[in-house]
Image (tube, rainbow over all chains, first blue to last red; front, side, top):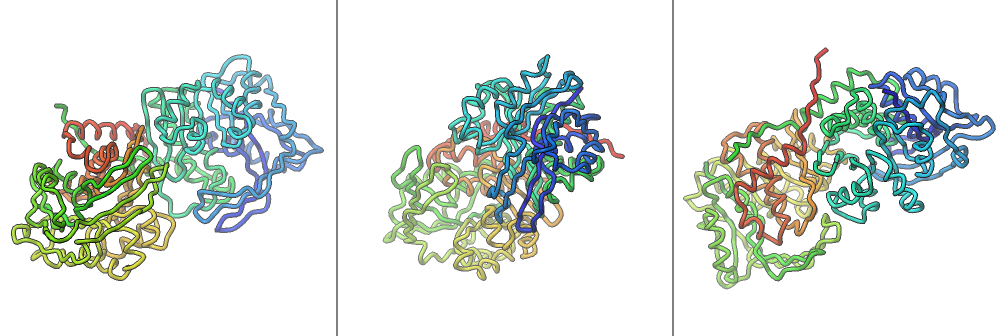
Length: 309
Length: 309
């Protein structure tokens, strides 16, 4: 089953209490594709970069079986750039600089070779662009997963809700779920958001884990308690990439299988934060992933037998 | 196995976004005993109240098989009183008033009938008073569980650490674990705190669940996602009471059984917040508890088979 990812391919400059980087390769589509590569044989990417984007970064992605036919290169322009600084708690950050560059005029085109898309991951981008990709596909994918952020709720709520109504799974964090729904209780928020269209809602709570809702069920996946969070950049995208990659590999979009996909996504995200940017994800083995998934199983496993009255 | 609880028996005045109460019955020992009553046949309480404490509250506790021989009544003094107001997020609160009253001169005495204590729950109180109770027992209980709070870390850290070194299980929240250890990472904090003496550490994260650590293992219990949190007062004490009550009933203090105890404690706490004060806990059936424990099982259950290489 073919996986198509749309999202940014970018430069990040990151400052954490542990150190800082110059411009390094980042972006939602980058993290999503690297995570998905643990499950699928090929990830098709639609994105845009400038002439300043390095060949070795593209080679690195190709080495992870990421197809870049859909990566538009604008030779005379610059790649999207974000600079941010994390606070001491690593849960909050300030944006120091955002240069949209090539993103300002991004007009995503889906190559003919990508039209067999069965699984579509819409990484965080303007909701109008996300929608354009759905509309550019000749047939509707089996599953559309959408990530977004509070920024679009602030400036483009109507367009955002319109795009949300077209997807199967929405993935946002707890504060965004509250903002989108106007409900503080995440249970109430989930009900309202599912009424907006998506059959499934994933609420990411960072170090507190993630919740999966459908109309009738809720599943909670913990985050692994970590000694050290070195750089949270890309953790949410890595989670999403692991989630949709697992679903695309297993070809099963039941609630039960989405639970497994969330555990795999959480496991991958727990690696992502161990080093700056994509560094850890570039050199992650399947054995390491399986070992960590086992730690998740151990973490939440308990044995209570309830005797039916 | 005999369970002994020490802690406050008090009046609370509570204000939440949903309403406010006049003085109602509260206190750590009250919530702990009501929760433990779902598991043990008798809970012995050491505490102190004033002449203003109502007989019907004592009758209510006795109806839940709480033994009040150790409840000292000072007829000419007033019961400990706390007034607080919760913020809109229900996770933070302001103390509006604290009247120590009878607590100012509290000198806990353990009746001879309570000396068979095998399980000791030290509810939040001055660490010197908690220690005095341990020292008043002729033999060391099989298990000592201690609750405390940041207030004692601010004003009595040395005494607190001395008492902590004498107990088996310390139960605190995430911010308190960070303050006590000086570590932001809860994994690192747990290592430092376990090095202070307790074999087990429970870190309560409110709506984000709870972690159980020993030297080598970690277990994560979620909190049930709730539509409505009406009044969080007493939730931590209810959790602790369910935890030690379950252990006292099952007479098994292994890590595996503590995991079950945490699930039962979490289930009881999820009821406590549904109404003001002790109201929900006074009329809670075992069937309701078992039904909710099943919801916890469903909430975190997933099925991944890892094939060993």
